[in-house]
Image (cartoon, rainbow, N blue to C red; front, side, top):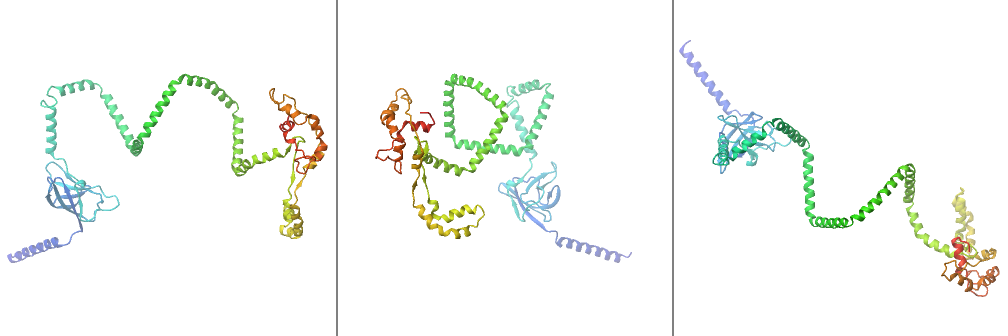
Length: 440
């Protein structure tokens, strides 16, 4: 090949190489994101060091600059790689002599991502422990345990000798203890949520007890007083418990022997109480009106004749048509049709409502009584009311004289006889005996 052709090929190859280099340098690369992180130190970290996620390179360190007592490290990583918003930056040393790189952790599992141009403070970065720090710490420990420290009088040596003697032959027990401790810690780890909740509940309980310190002190003082009193009366309590024991045994035997009947009674009592609850309104009304009704009944009762004084109430005839139709309506008669037919009867019904009819005189006419006074000792040996009942009211002959004939002359209200004498029925001892159902 001619030298001129070789020269031309060499120039062409050099030109193509230069053009390829320029294109590679100027061609826009993949989109990247910037991140700034502050570290307490950056030993062995230089610009161009790797930025990795899970050990895979995703970017490079662009600058390392000391700033005060910290080191400012700027880096760039591929925007396609998602980094969680709570990520941390950690300097990792691969070996004692190799360069170090920055690891972004934890791996992204969902949620918001770290924004572009974000900054990580010292609280979100970590650096490895240096070898000279480890060596210095070991040296300090050796000096503290050496002849110039804890072992100055041979204390450490004696401790090790006693420990060796004590632990000699206990390897199996120590291994079992470690295994049991491991299982215990595993159990606690599985139930760590419950343990944390228990600790939180204990914190709240202690807080509440601290807030109620005075009440707790007063409670303990009162409890102490009660305990002292019970201690002083222990003989009485012991006797009461001894007496209570047989009673409880009898109750137990009774309950066991009558279990079926008790269960049936309880079920029936439940039904009764259910009815009472449903009818509590009516029961309340009865309890409100019953005392007045019983009082009126006692006043209406005639103890001599053994009858009740009655008075007819004709107010229901005020609208006689409606009263009759209400009865007819229960038999299927239309209410409007009935009222239209019986409406002319209402004036007669209104006239009846103005009447006040006392029928007690009929009872007095048709009642025959022959009262017998109670014996003198009816109310006890020292009570004179029996004699007063015989003599103070005119004796038996007087009462007989005021018999049926005198009762016939009584007025409509029953308050006196024809001669204007007051009615003595309510003061008769025989009346109380008849009311109580006894024999005079």
